[in-house]
Image 1 (cartoon, rainbow, N blue to C red):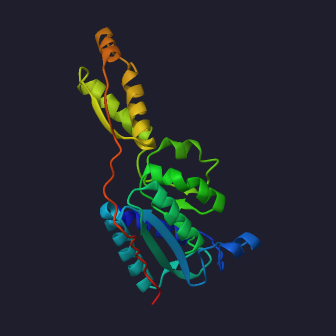
Image 2 (image 1 turned 120 degrees about the vertical axis):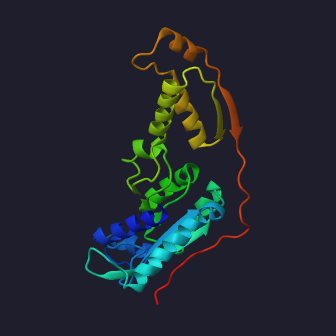
Length: 248
């Protein structure tokens, strides 16, 4: 999976017809070039929880190093460019994600943000990226919000996880089919993903499907929900780390 995401990003570069730009200010003024792209390189960045997803950044770096060693990625304008990839640690804290993404966009001048981890982190920066017209490629979230607001947030390109509503509905269908009398306890994070998942599960379990008996409908009405909210986080590293392959 880690390598597949990086390959998908490379394929996106290869099929895109993009124009080199000296910086985001130049792009804003001229409107006819793409920031984060020069005649020799294209810059991507990501923000993730290094203690959990650091291997993902390591895998992407290894693949991009391999591509760069072979001459870079051939792009739609006929030029080959090396990939400069910067990964910053946010400890799965949306506030740190915001700071990291702003730094990547405004200081590192990346062309796109790739593969953000988490629903809360993604939603914390998607409007900023839309305002800056910076692509958000393959965010790892299943939130339905990105799908329903895509017209207002056209910078989002693809998503990695299944849509939360569909995934939870499938789980509910299996519970209704295989364990109709089950008692269910839900442990969820107190954020948009957790609360949305809980609401979707409750709604799906209350649906009376074809072939449901009166007794099963009654049992669903009487089902009691045990909720345990968790807001704990894995301790974040004290400093950010950056993985950045450079042109040789």
